[in-house]
Image (cartoon, rainbow, N blue to C red; front, side):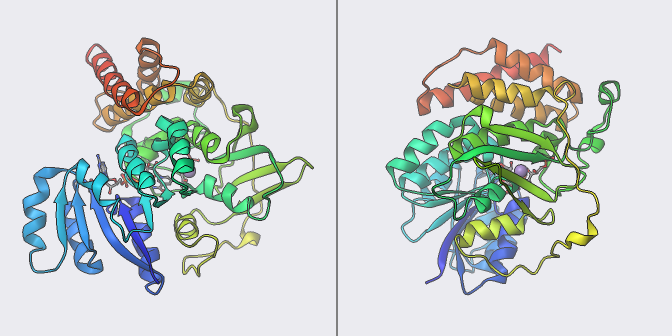
Length: 385
Ligand SMILES: NC(=O)C1=CN([C@@H]2O[C@H](COP(=O)(O)OP(=O)(O)OC[C@H]3O[C@@H](n4cnc5c(N)ncnc54)[C@H](OP(=O)(O)O)[C@@H]3O)[C@@H](O)[C@H]2O)C=CC1
Ligand SMILES: CC(=O)[C@@H](O)[C@H](O)COP(=O)(O)O
Ligand SMILES: [Mn+2]
């Protein structure tokens, strides 16, 4: 039986690479549904190529175009956020890849878990915003959340066969982003095009900016806490500019296990799809003798304060990581539209975190309200800059 997949965010960086993995393994996987937001042309092309049962476009203004373009093939067409959250519940789906960007991932992931679907989780914002709730639901509905994020996939791979051995420490590697060697002074004048040049990975715009501020690594620290049930002090970030060691675990006897590979998301995607088995990978494989120097250094949290903010948010708990995420989404969006400068991303997030109300034990509705209110606050701050 082929595994039936729902690919949420099929037009993005992770989504398109997931489709490559699926194309290379036609005997193993079948696509039940594809979803996108604005890139209707690519969604049409994908629907024609993979002929899924259904496609969903989040932005309803593209519905007409999508329906007309697919009228001659037997594919159901839906539109809107609610439709994405409903389609993931469809009975035949075995696994849902959450590859949409940002807070939009939370609601469909919750619905998929409630419907008992295995989650291949790329959308780290889901765990940043509501990790506790997601874990509770996953336990209640006996579903697995399998990491796709490269670092977390590395940790997950290192944990194979270690069921009785507790983790002493997670060592999350960070590339350091394009500004790793910049001074604080130089960072004041960086331009959008510089921030969009990730030294190792080709990814969507939002995560690329998150890597440049190291917010991405902060999010990944929070993501690791929820995925691997460790305390904040058990997660250490190490800057490894070559992005070859994707992360490590230290066990109680001192042994460190690591997973190495080229910077290529097709490996973590295919591992999540086929876990516990490994698939053949046609991509360029790591040739270890090509790497004479693999280096590791401490992160500079003065230059990259968002990493510390993430630890602070994680330790504070409640709705604080949700505030951090919402403020970051607004700030990054504004930076991508060149409405604010690079270093203003940090100050905007800090001020939003200060202004927002704190909720110790948030419900799902509290997260929704916190996200909404934090965005209003952050946008207000931008207006007054
Ligand atoms: N790219 C990477 O290598 C990695 C990404 N991740 C995580 O994976 C997720 C996706 O990242 P990436 O692929 O880079 O992002 P992209 O920006 O490349 O793609 C985002 C996808 O989400 C869709 N989308 C955007 N907004 C919405 C919305 N409001 N509702 C529904 N769908 C939406 C987009 O649709 P459309 O294009 O049609 O507008 C697109 O399909 C992020 O959470 C990121 O942090 C994690 C590790 C590595
Ligand atoms: C590919 C991936 O998993 C990204 O999250 C990557 O880790 C970004 O690189 P940084 O280490 O620069 O954040
Ligand atoms: Mn990552």
